[in-house]
Length: 229
Image (spheres, one colour):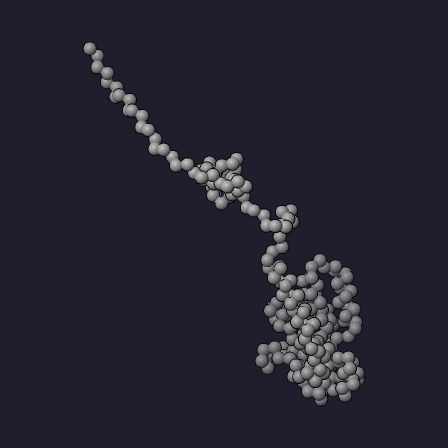
């Protein structure tokens, strides 16, 4: 009598009952009406439970219109606030403007006299203590015409390019002495070429000093300045 050498088939084990997963409330369903966990298990949510639930749009939000970055909105708000504060600020008197530039009434009189008698005024500024100085001279109308012609010729596309171009041209026209070099007999283009070879940070410092000089001249020659003398 032959003996069956095969092992008897194991009896099937009854699987433990699964607890039903509560469905997602109507209106928040996942893909194909699945629950969040079913969608996650099937991989339709890209491996993310959060992606299985569609995000609700805010009221009035236009999905076709890109949202303005927060930092842009912040800058616009800051600019609007700065303009509002300037408009609310009281107008300074002539004496207050002179005091802001740390110049006396007598010095202002000398500047006004220079402009009408010599046609220009020069002022020395310290760049690095008293070791490195720069002397600026007021610009002529032809200097303004030159930079405007350059802008029209180059037709730059970005405001930053225009600002850089204007700053270098103004610096070239105003800088009379720097680091012991006398540029009074140099042509404006020669000064421009010299400035173009300076380190960028040095040029920025010089432009900042020139801005102070220009602001001072505008306030000294302010409308009604003659009536103050």
